[in-house]
Image 1 (cartoon, each protein chain N blue to C red):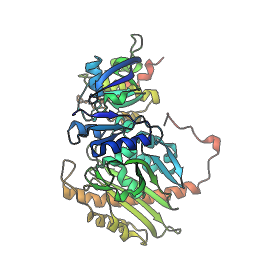
Image 2 (image 1 turned 135 degrees about the vertical axis):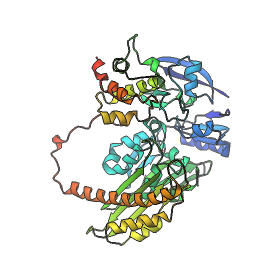
Image 3 (image 1 turned 30 degrees about the horizontal axis):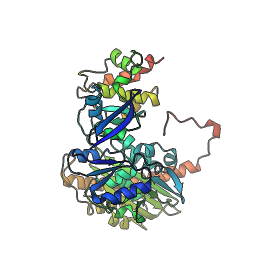
Image 4 (image 1 turned 180 degrees about the vertical axis):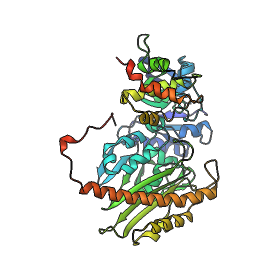
Length: 155
Length: 312
């Protein structure tokens, strides 16, 4: 069974028809070609598939594509503006906030949501917010440092 | 996931009508964080999903008859961030903060969480200890269900297939009451509890005797469990740490945990006693802290520091 949906992805209007049982992550990756968002655990625990829905972070592996109808989705591809990386992305590069990289799109999207609410979070606030974004390389110190210093790159 | 029909009713009346049409083949979906996993695992195979995402309202958090009413569609995040609850019932703020991760709390709703009826969840013990009731409505009308009679078995409640939770009502707490929820988390911060315990304790005016108490536990049986015998042991007794320890021991008789990677059944049983005692101690500390706050001179209005960050 298919359903027509209209939503915004990284600021662009998207109108598409999806099977009702299509997951948002599969719609983003396979229907729209936005492969930046990764699938890790598939049960909403690891945070690799983090995207923003109307600014709030969600697990795209637990969300049906039809549930995004009428909403505004931001993926890691939508963070850079006019070819310029956002402060979190710059900071992750500057301070080595990643190792193998598979968790990075989720980490960067989650951290961007944090800084939108709290531009200068302290270490505890970062840990509390990022708790659901796992890094199996255990690169947490550098991730925390990158988030803490991201404000340096804000204009 | 097997294919299914996806309906998007715009109001409660349309929800009722759709549920009536499909009967037990339909499932309500709000945030979907629990249901989608169960559908992926084919534990649930509805032929129709009735989405609540286009239904407006039903997400308020407000004072009602001196108590607090939370709409069934309020998200966990909304409860956690509510300034009203932070002021009136910080124990509930803390309870909802403990649920999974922010990504889940942004989507999962209060009514959906209760209808999911996983005995490892955080909110049920707290809400049972607070004496909460659930309002369920259908095309046939509305009924109010005390939460301690709501859960039947693993993932099973007394709700009929055509009913929807529209509101959770927390009655006004008696004066001199403290509340606490504690969660034993030996593994990771976003895990289910090994054992969780909630206590709501009321002392008499002289602060000497336990006037009333409600205790509930999570993760130690097929449903959240209210420890009524432990409560009975405490009512009318003088406030003493020995009494709290005895109540903890009594609560062990009410629980029936399973052995899993969060602990053996015997260990969880022992921890149930420890965590009931600690929840009672924390509820008592809450009463004393409230009394201190009341006695302290109120700070001048303009000196109150602005709250940090944006909270919704």
